[in-house]
Length: 249
Image (cartoon, rainbow, N blue to C red; front, side, top):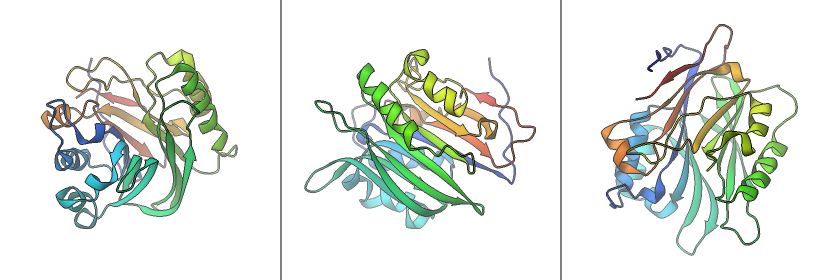
């Protein structure tokens, strides 16, 4: 059932989360420029990315579409480094970046994981955004979620947003701790992109009343460019009479 998407107002802004699958689409083609076009389609002031390769991201038309020509700043948060490139998370934003921190979520014997922790100046106010990509193991994710929640401020003196690929499809196993902290966020299916079944990608906002709407971004391009669909939220700084809306395409 489709529900109306809330209209964006002056105090609102858009946040998105997108696992770009190292730029490889479901057609098997490696195409960074196609991923960049999907990010532009989102028309979001804040976009958290997972599975990013810095070499491809900074090269050619991909960088042009997102950085100088589009007025977006790209902040990299690598979880793995190699001689020529880094792999991990990134934040693409049109807002002013005030501070950047990196949270190590790696566990021994597991693939390196991490989160990007960024303070942004949004329309005169500082907000905190964490972009995360959790592991595939159940116990691994439990430890990583515990670590993420430990870094948040106990005081509710500013808006906080956590987003990313949480690889969690059974909400009550690990995510109830996140819901207890942020408030429950709607669950939308994002994987696989051509026929979404699993709700792997998430966006939480604190205070929870600031989350105006949440939707999957389904276009011919987004269905092809990665094995995940982007998730897009509208967030308000004035959450008085807002109600969460849903849009499924």
